[in-house]
Image 1: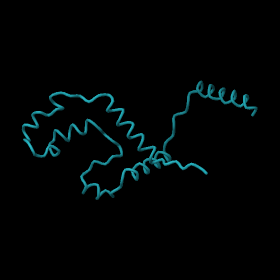
Image 2: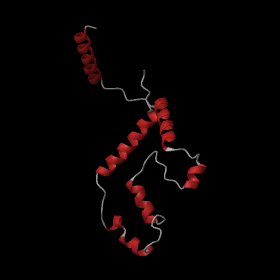
Image 3: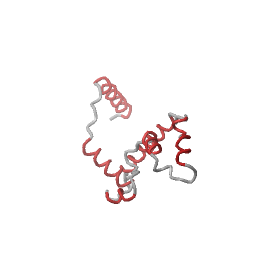
Image 4: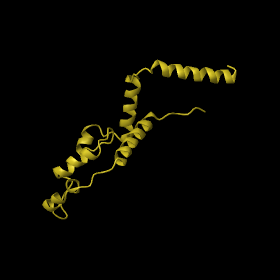
Length: 124
């Protein structure tokens, strides 16, 4: 039995790891990020999500490449794709277009030496 690789899942995992790494750098807590003035302006039980301050700071906090934060109507107009569909498309794009930088000659030589040593130990 062969193992099937879900490249879309790998791309999603990369997105999640990047977001976690960003969070581990720490989240600033100060008068601006706490938005005390905005809370006073908006008032209790009103819409903070529609306020420019909330939108601007949300953009600063996280900039995912795959997670779709558009309004539902915009998401539907854009094809209603789910995260896995977008990740799979991104994986296809990477596989079709990515050209890695060649390794430096000294690294290639060291890798070749490791392979040759392993082959000698295995009698290949």
